[in-house]
Each structure stands twice: as C-alpha cells, then as structure tokens.
Length: 174
Image (cartoon, rainbow, N blue to C red; front, side, top):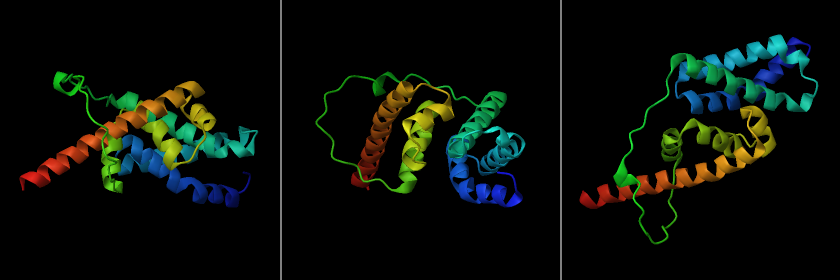
C-alpha cells in the first residue's frame, strides 16, 4: 500500500466492517469512530512492514481490538456482576422452541455477553473471519477461539431464550 489511492481503497474497503466491530465492543459511536481512525493511523505508520498482503484484514482487526483493550484498561470500564443464585439453579426443562430474533434483539443480547465471548462471535459470524484469523486478531490460541465460540453461542442462546420468555410473559399479562 504505497500510494494514497491504495490507502483510500483500504479505508473504503474496510471502514464499515471495522466500525461495526468497534461499535460492538465499545457501544459508543464516537469512541468506535476514534478506534477505527486510530487503526488506520497505525496502518499508515506501520502497515508497510506487513509482509503478507493477504493478512491486511486480520492486521486491521487485530490492531483495532488491541486499541480497544488499551482504551478499556485506561478507562477501567469493566463491569462488576453480582451473583444471583436464583438464575443459577439447576432446572430440568424441556427443549425450547426456536426463538425468532430480530437485529435489535440480537444486538441487545450480544451487548449482555462478556467481551471475551462477544468478540469471537462477532468476528466469526458477522465479519466472517476464520478461527485462525480470530486467534491472530485476539492473540489467543485457536482452541480458545473454538471454546469461546461454543460457550458464547450457548450463553447467547440462553439470553435470547430468557428475552423471549420475558416478552411472552409480558404479552400474556397485557
């Protein structure tokens, strides 16, 4: 990527996906834009060192994710979660019917997930990165990617089922 045209093509080709990923991590429009801008700034400074041109997408997502982690550490925005015993009791339940989900419901459910599960799910299903690319982007082993995807899907399913049950209960009351 030597010329301005190439850089502009890079920005045009990846901005939207990077922005959506950043927004899914930080949940703030201005901060997501700043993260994407910082990612492209770092590319302008260091991108020439990338030896394999097929790794540009992975490099950009990795850089954005690391920038977000740095921001999150600086802001100490990690949420504390209270243990709720009634939510963790073992219950035998019949198999649930599939839940119909719209985009807004899915986004709210993703927002409830810890970032350790949310990031791999977003990168795999929405950004269509491979296990290996996700592992490189998040700097974790491929096996960890696979287990977080599996666990994340289960947690997401639980959240969506719980949301569906609340919605159904509210509809019955009205």
